[in-house]
Length: 421
Image 1 (cartoon, rainbow, N blue to C red):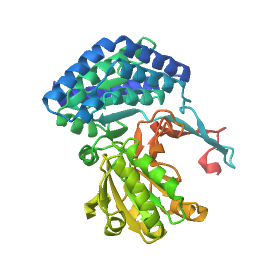
Image 2: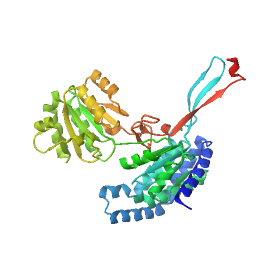
Image 3: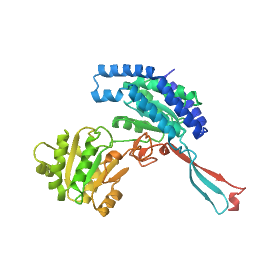
Image 4: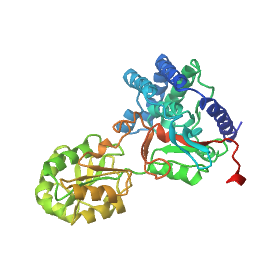
């Protein structure tokens, strides 16, 4: 059987499973999720054995220590994944929510009801915990999933997917609700992306190359997460100590994530006071500063001249671009031109200036006086998230359970016909 035939078979099986999943009650789904967590824990030996193989291969390929750490599983990390599944079970179920209800003058009653999307394909790289995160979130929202992980975690991913499906089946999970493509040929991405007769949505999680490939091939809607080029703007009305604290947190608390700060903009009126203060703190934490000429003149030694490419860079590292701007307008224009519509912040004591920034910045999440690191589903109170969308349709920002649903209209009448209207 060819790769294409195998993936088409998985699609047909997923479609069948999705129809059964759509009819499960919240209680049924929660019971299944708890069983999945138990199944993961009882399969710990097999999962860790598979992970050892992936780590060995990664070391032979001389992957970076950071990449290997992202791949690595141990008993503590597996326990955290299982706890995450149980937390999803405790979250409110969006399926069945009445979004709106109204009655027309002719007596027809219309209800807008939240329903599962159906079959969701998720293509991801590196971290094997994504296998569990994606599968359980989709399941809670009543969706079947087809997962395609990267070659670097193939043994871990296979073991996790098998543990989740087999554990869930003991509590009534429909067969083939969670399927993992068992090979990593690039051909598999193409067949998955073209399988619109079975797949309702595809979500790529990974680098720009992966996302661009999926977008170019997909015949179904794609929810994508492009670069996280996040900004902090220290306004002329800001408290410089607050601005420094937010800047340091947003850059250094966890620099390798999409909601970490990449460019700091500083109003010229506070640059002389603010830049030496924040630069000293950042340099002490080993942050490399890439500055425009105005910032360089103020900070002095220990910085690098910024190039045009730095304003569009997602470093995911202890590197920060710094630019002095003349005005609030200049900051807004810079962010809207060079940003990635992810997460951006203004630090200011002026409500009017903050409200203008909040209104005019065209990003998924816009902050006033708080770190961009809060751009996260759990921090928003959504529980777990499947990613952060920089799209505008159908989901934007942190994607949680509600964003894994669609809706339909239920129209109830008493014999009305169009000719009577």
